Image (cartoon, rainbow, N blue to C red; front, side, top):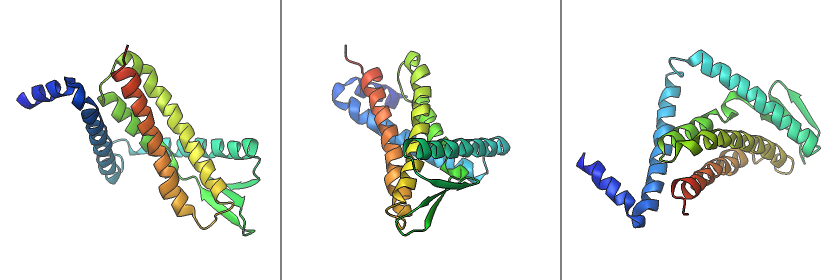
Length: 191
C-alpha cells in the first residue's frame, strides 16, 4: 500500500508525469495483448458463438465499406467473390485480397476500450471520446484494406510488407495519437 502512495506522489511531480503516463500506456497495451491471446487460445470462452458472429458481421461490413471506397472514391475496377477483392495488377494478373474475420478491427476496438476505461481521465469526456475512437479505428481499418488493395496494383509481390508492417504499424500509430490527444487535451489539460 505504501508503494501506491509513493507512486501517486511521484505522479503529481510534473517531472515524472509524462514518463508514468507512457509507462502506463505500454503496460495496458501489452497486458491487453497477452490477455487477448489467452482468451483467443480458449476460443473466446464462454462467448465463442457470439464472438464468431461478431467477427463475421464485422468482416462483411469491412468488405462492403472497402469495396465502396475502391469503386466510388478511387474508381478502381474490382472483382469480388465472397469476401475477396480482386484488382488487376501491373503484371496483368489479379491480386486477391481476402477480408477475413481476422482482418476486422475488433481486437483494436477492444484494445481501445481496455486502454481508455483503465487509463485515468474524466468520465464526462470518456463517454464520447471512446465511441469516437471506435469509429476512427473502423475507418482506419477501411483505409488499411483499401491501401493494401491499391498497393497491390504496382507492387503485387509486396503483400506481406504492406499488410504486416506498413498498415499494421499505421493502425497502432493512430491509436497512439488518439491516446496522446486524450492525455494532452483531457487528462492534463492546461487552462
